[in-house]
Amino acid sequence: MSSKERAVCGLKMLFRLPNRILPLFEKCHVRSLHVFPCVKAEETANSVVSKLSKDQMKKREIRRLAQRKAAARRPASEHPLYMPVNKALRFLRAAEVGQPHSQQTLSVTTTVVSERGAPLLSGNLSFPNALKSVKVAVFTNDEQQAQLAREKFNCHLVGGTELVERIKAGELALDFDKSFATPDIANTLASQIGRILGPRGLLPAAKKGTVSDNLEALLADSMGSLPFRQRGNSVSIAVGKCSFTDKQMLENIVAAQKGVKFALSNQKTKKPSLLGQTTLTSTHGPGIVIDFA
Amino acid sequence: MSRVATQLKFFNKISSTTVEPQILLNAHKYSGLKLMFQQQNHNGHMGARKFWHEYLPTLQFYNPDLQFQVTRVKNEDKKDASVPCTLEILDKENAVVDSLDMRNKQGSEIMQELLEKLEHERVAEEDIVRL
Image 1 (spheres, helix red, strand yellow):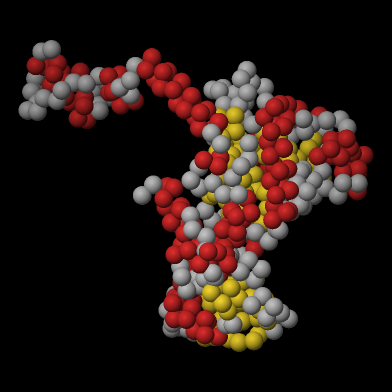
Image 2: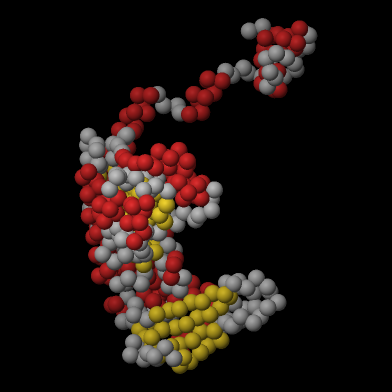
């Protein structure tokens, strides 16, 4: 590299000049005093990301997956923070003392160990002791179906295109927990308010089984059940309030366990996923490891 | 300190290392305590808040049947000293038996005064949960 080239290179680094100005600098033979080492862009990118080769990265990933699987197979009672559920509840209620009632929610979080590329775990749960009434939204242009949803199932929101418009304009609070639709409106929904409902998991889709011609059967099946889904590597489900008795809590936890196990057995993967460490926690309280799997 | 050690310390703070509130209240006589104080510290409300945070969990842990109601009032105005800072002891019919003014007192002082007013017995050594 000649001294002239080096100087231009240095200038490039210093000012990040657009290419069309650079020839001007090349013409005038001014030598910069400080010569910067010329580092090409691709070299920096590589050195920043990782020093490991592709092969090593792959090996590390396999090793870590094996470690996580081994950890998931270990019984929960070996963990130093393990407690039986009733003792855990006693601690959580103590930690939660004096907090407002609405903030005393107990939830179960369990890690999911699955192969790369496995579909996310999701499903429906119905609790023997409900935390709150489930709010359902129904989208349909068919007046007969809408009437049915309104009267027989007492749905929170029922409507067609005009409801879609109102949600799009942001006039309505999105306080429902699940939604259903008929096929005639499903496409409009996806295009109009997919961006609003999609991230919250509220968009009806044929793939999820929430779009159907016969809303009556669909609603009767899923009234009173709450959806859950995997986020990241874990599934988190609200199972109760601090005011629930131990028996109620246990019933709910068992129901949650059944729901998650059912979703796990229905997951479309080559190798079945595993459930790892499960913690019971409250809004302000600590997390306590419990038996779940 | 590791995550597990921090957590164990937290549990032990509730169940064993906080000694003063390790008492069993007479469940036939009392139904609970009712506290009322500010969310903010000014006008002497800090001790009440500290009492709630440091001593009430242990009290609840050893008396799971009692109800502890905490009402926290939001009051940003420092000149307004009208918010009460009281602790009321409730009997079976939820009537106030005794009350305590918590203003300008530290959490430990409030605990001592409460112990004098309450009919209680200490938790037996073998019943104390240690993790």
